[in-house]
Length: 140
Image (cartoon, rainbow, N blue to C red):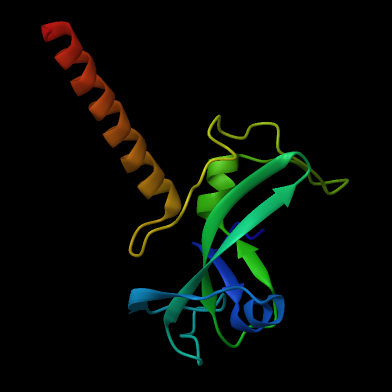
């Protein structure tokens, strides 16, 4: 977890070692490292679909893959904000007591937008569609 990171990212080395299937992005995304410099290995060109398990939490999501990193996976601000973790900074205990109701369903970042933004758009479309269907039923 990284409260300063603006996305969900996985190192390409870790993705390779774990055997994740890479999915090519329609267009590469320039990325900056945690120190603000551009990544020497170039832009993000791939994503991977992963399952995230922690305590009783589970979800399937898509994570950007970035080269030249020593860390494995960073779950950044979009993921942290969505799950609103309960953290005891003294003991290091992390509880996922405030997960959204939708946890366990698919949530995926989309190129150019954070997963949180995309999720909200999808939820709004689903609600609008339900309202349209309800209106149609009332007319009949």
